[in-house]
Structures are given as structure tokens and as C-alpha cells.
Length: 213
Image (cartoon, rainbow, N blue to C red):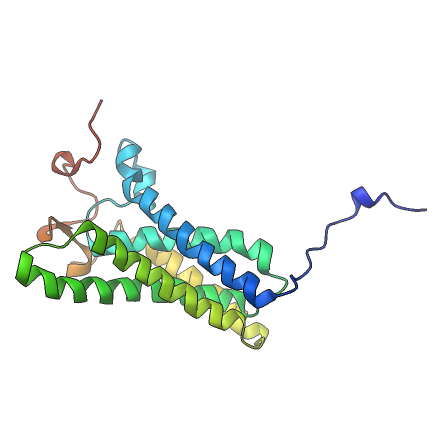
């Protein structure tokens, strides 16, 4: 009995040039992760300060809250990308765990490096450079992920370690908005000045970006 080809499961084959395909995917990752993070920056306010949205959107202007939105953007894209590249990307979950871990480190280092230069001179940073530090972190993380995905395949243990690392980072992302440590990375940094506030704020009136209806 001949089966109808339309009912056969589709098998996704590797592209003719896997390295080029992965490079394009990683370029897309930089653009999409940055876009998702930009949307999440305003998501809490646009949701009417809906409590569940605090988990994903920025609830203040601390460094951590900006790292968080890039983490969720990176995780969302990683889950989508996996469905399309799993047949030819080596060490996928290790690569994405590295990207998710390195991106915030790149942001922190570049952000405070540039502020260390501009704050003594002008007393404040600029929106373009703030965004640039985020893009730099994503580029660094996704570039390292690309290098890992085109390297020789490792054993199954590395996959489990990559998934475990992502799970730990996800738990931290879920927890730290609600239980922020009292340190500078988690302190509201509005107008390039620390305010002494952490986590969800009592009053958002001074921080509104969009005019209330």
C-alpha cells in the first residue's frame, strides 16, 4: 500500500552550506533579541503594571532589569531557532547557554566602561550608547555561540550541562526581580543616578514614558 506523500512526516535536511546558514541565523538572533528586549523594556508600563508582566518586562532602570529583558529575548529566540537548526548545529544547547551567560557580562563591562568615561565629562550617558552596550553584549554572546555550533560535536553530557545551565539562569531570572540583592546592579539607576530603590517600585509616576489615558 502506497502512502500519500502529503501525509508523510517532513524531514528537515541540512542546508548545502551549514556554516553560512548558522551565520545568518546568528545575525538574525542579534536583531530579534535586541527587538524583543526593546519591547520588553516598555512591556510592564504598557500592560498597566500588570504584576505577571513584571517577570518579563523592566520594573525599574537598574542594570539587572536591562540584563533580564535581554535574557528573555535570547531564550525565546533560542527555543525558536532550535526547531530549524537542530539537524546541523553542533552543541546547540551548550552554545546557547554560553550566549545567555556571556551577553549580560558583555553588557555590564561595556556599559560601566563607557559610563566611566562619559560621566566625569558630561555627567550622563546617551541613549544611543546605552542601546549600543546591549547590542554589543548580544553580538558577543551569539558570536561565541556560532563558534561552538560549528565546532566538533561533543558528547551528550555537554547537552545536559547546557540545558542545566539554562535552567539555572531561568530560575535566577524568575527570582531576582522579586528578591533583588541590595547591590548596585539591582538598584534603580534612573537618570544615571542611583535612587536607593530595588525591584518593583511603589510609584511609577516619575518614570512614565507613555502618557496615561
